[in-house]
Amino acid sequence: MRLKRTQNDFRVTEILEEEGLFEEGPFTLYRVTKRGFTTFEAADRLSKAAGVPREAVAYAGLKDKDGVTSQVMSVEGGRPVSMREQGLVIRPVSRSSRALTSADSKGNSFEIVMRDLSGDDMRRIRVNLEELRNGALPNYFDDQRFGCLRHGQGFIARHLLKGNVEMALRSLIAAPSPYGNEQVEQFKAYVQRHWGQWEKLHGYCRGRRGATVFEHLMHNPGDFTGALERGISTRERTIHLFAYQSYLWNRAASIRVQEIVGEEDVAWLPGDASSLPVWRKLTEPQLQQLRDFALPLLGPGELSAEAEALYKKVFRQEGLPMSAFLKLDMSGFRPQLEQRPFLVEPEFLRAAPAQRDDLYRRRQCMRVRFTLPRGQYATLVCKRLGMPTESGYETLRIWVARHPLDWPDDKGNTAPMSDRMDRRHWSERGRPRQRRDGDRGYPDPRCDGPRRHDDRGDRGPRRDDDRGSRGPRRDDDRGFGGPRRDDDRQQRAYGSHQGGGGYRRDERQDDRPRRDYGDDRPRRDDQRGGFGQPRDDRRGPYSQQRDDRPPRDDRGDRQDSRPPRDEFRGPAGPTKGPSPWGEAQARKSKEKREQEGQDD
Image (cartoon, rainbow, N blue to C red; front, side):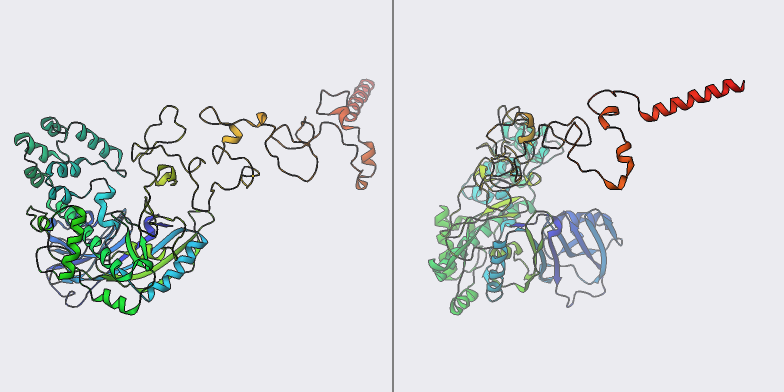
């Protein structure tokens, strides 16, 4: 199952509270539709086009970069804007008497295409669709909130709580990412190699990220706190605080779900930060108990006894005191108490009939639509739709954009991702590295562990999909039952591109199974056709005349008057004599010359 395979597969439309918003005033509201842009990048483009400072642009919420999203932004003053460019369309909507705030957002409407579906995937989606229409699921933060984990930085706030400010700063600037582009990763590798040489790094980073950090450290060695505050923007620090705060909320909510539901009815969803428990069956009293439970995001303020007990359990597992988090006092790292609904209850949830997937052969895709309140994650709903319907289910994998997630087992444990299990399409892989000597596969660009092999080889464990698993051997190069190729396209016929492992057609081994043609015809020895002797011409499989062919009656005397083919124009050698047509022409020429001589 795959989500966000293309940007058109994930569409989001913002829904606003219109009351008191569309009034005449100094603000202009714009509908911003973007593809491949973050909300911050789109707001920057809008401010430049309107000729106003960046602070004059406001919006109700952040929208995903990987998809086609539509939201409203307000601009105070400035010139009118109406623009259309690659991936970005901005159109004026109305005037307003005030700037947009998060309170104006009512929610989002989603239209998502789930791709690469087998028959069992579609069955599970239909079963879970009916369950989710009549129920709910915990309002967890999903993987979009934990980009710091996906890009190798870890939780920066956790480093700060442990007193390791240098590690926090180093992770922010130079943590290697499996999804970074080549230039950015080379920059990070240089910073990692020369960490501590502040003057050299300041010269290298001049005009780029980190220049202010290394300038401060060059004059104040060891003051990593000051470098963090001066060189990292407040917005970026706040994002990392929210990531750790969301992780703590997920952990506390997970404990509460397991306490109420019970171990026998708990199921699990995959996640970057941790596995997330949900339920297969839930009674009405249990559902009401979860609906009434209040668990705010942790910050200074009043907590209920139950919520405080849950957070204390989480911090004991983290090995940190909860008081240290509440006392964080650094610009961008000051947590605040914020209420959050405990359950997600999708509205207008429906699915269109399955269609043939135009990206994956012999697979299906399905379009689902639903509406969620602000701050809730659509990918979490899609994971719940694809969840195994019973315990002890086979291993499943879901892809979100380029990122794979393996489904946890019945205990919530996920096996470490094996590089030999990585069978992504080449266009979905991370940045490739140079081939190593003697390496028959491609090294994994994400780590220095075991090498992985590509989708077209047959080394490594079996696939879980229906497209070429290591099942029974094949009869021919494309069916089942015969010997396995070294790659799926050409290595059997033309040999390995690395100089070994294959053989040419004229060097086939005797024990290779042959196709059953239903007779005893010998195999052909050339590559053009025919099953008898090698061809000597381009017309048929035999070099001699075929005497077993019955004469054609419709030709009459012409059949008998024609000379044998091999006497005049046989393909096996030069002609054996003049043709009747040549003799007739010579005779006519001779008679003409004699007649001309008599006339003279």
